[in-house]
Length: 319
Image (cartoon, rainbow, N blue to C red):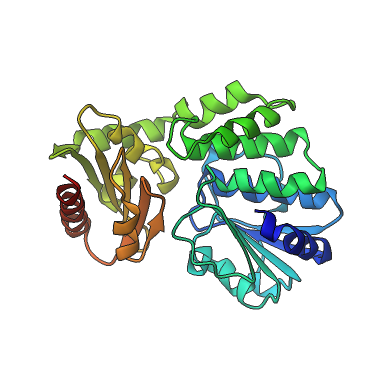
């Protein structure tokens, strides 16, 4: 990231009223990178506002929640807008309107499908997570506290699946080593993020497993909005299902398809060796080589057929 070091540091130093936003339906990396960066900028004297949709309760322990804005976005007039973990501008949701009227914008991400939509784009697909990229940026400001370290460690653990995904590099372990040198409860974080489940999460996992199908090395589950709500779960309780059904013997790819609150259908894909990012991009989505997704304007059954056919074609081409 050397080519952006000076420009990026100057943009941050010159910004006083700063908005930081993550993608819609924020996951662990989006929450961690947004709050970790916000805590750092606040410490160096910046007026920071965080724009995040509500997220899973399991991440509530990350410090900085008081900076999350709950008011009217039309009233925000930042002189610097920083998007984190967001592959395209439209994924900012309601915060896109704030982005559009801000002159200086920064895009910090690690998704290979990132569209580089900001004035300054700091996108490193080889990084394990956006939290890893944020670490590389804020170390230039020599400001890391126990709270910031805990936030960034959470993001790295979340996006690497506990350092097991192929996005994990030697540099990822080096950064994690630096972070746990602070007062970071790393065992508690690993347990909370990777293993601890609420009753609602267990209920929806049970329903998902009851609908599991496996064929031609592809595991898949579809859930309707009615099924999700009947289980007592929320959409924040769906994290982990697609990764879980990938961890089955002789399965190379996993597909989780569910009906969203707005009536659209969400498709999440994970794979051991098949590049799923190209499929996601084809349908207006994005992500990583082995973890990607997209939204569809059709039923869950129709989306499942489309994606499974695409996956089977990719697998047969590589055979």
